[in-house]
Length: 153
Image (cartoon, rainbow, N blue to C red; front, side):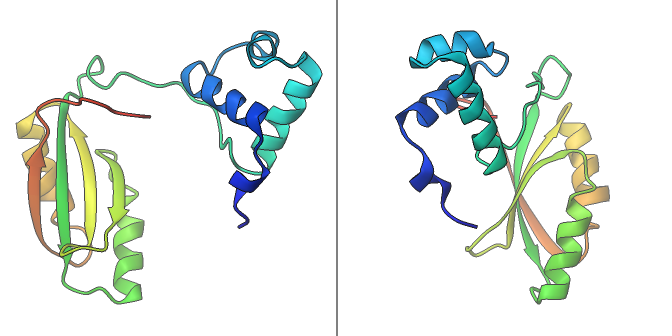
């Protein structure tokens, strides 16, 4: 996939900065803020969507107000890191709703998960019954977040 950064000019970058904070802004207001008229702004937004820089629009939910205030980061080590084992783990972890993020790492462990639950008891259940039972998991280490200082969605 080509590097889209080479295709972005100052207007594109301005559009992206505004949309990251105000995704529901009208095209007319967005155009006014970036110094273009409505039609070129719409055309730029369409192009940014087509080249995949803008991958979608969504509602950002407040997990704390939804009763999901407990955040833990989990280091996962696999017993097997051949491609078939990685694929099996990847497919299985996608089905765990409590796992907000999953990153394969170049580290002493294989994956880093961000897990969100209602409380420590719920986390303990998810860890013991779900995460530990994922394919090829040999061991885990948990780090509980006390406060989110910066979190970008």
